[in-house]
Image (tube, rainbow, N blue to C red; front, side, top):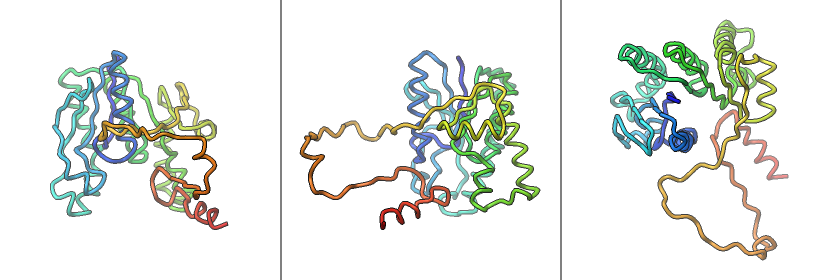
Length: 251
């Protein structure tokens, strides 16, 4: 199967999904699939922007095509924001030229960042290539913004983008969610025309480290008097509700 994955961030960019895509795509390549990734040069953080990668690269059997980031994006926030906003449009233009050049794909796959518009571009690109559409929902937009009080449910903008996202989900040949409760929420919001799959996120591979921790673990380690150590792995922001974890720790 010829698979086109569209996402702005791909390894060595630093968001978790960028590394997840490398793990998944290289695994699919070993299974005999023809994998192409369209992304941007590392740009998630200013430190990522110091890492320039080949614009075209064969990475463990995966064809990675990186479009250039905007000049001075690492220094001027407005330019960095402009790059984020215009990435879906640049991808849509790239897809049109790819179609004119005779490229073909069986499946177009994208995720939910940037919200709504990325799903729209993935859906339109799949139609352009007459391909199946896989939509990987890492979050449910715009509903999550409404729950956080960032968008009013009665607002015109909210209703507009909700209608677009509703169509993104409905027309997905495969809609992937992260959990049973997320899948149930999706079914209540909009049942996809295709399959609804649940794939939990997984521990990320450390591609920058070749060695593994081989420290021995003994039963005594489970019964010592050392403090309990807790790690949170994920984004730090409004949606995570980490203040509740801090309050629980105090209690």
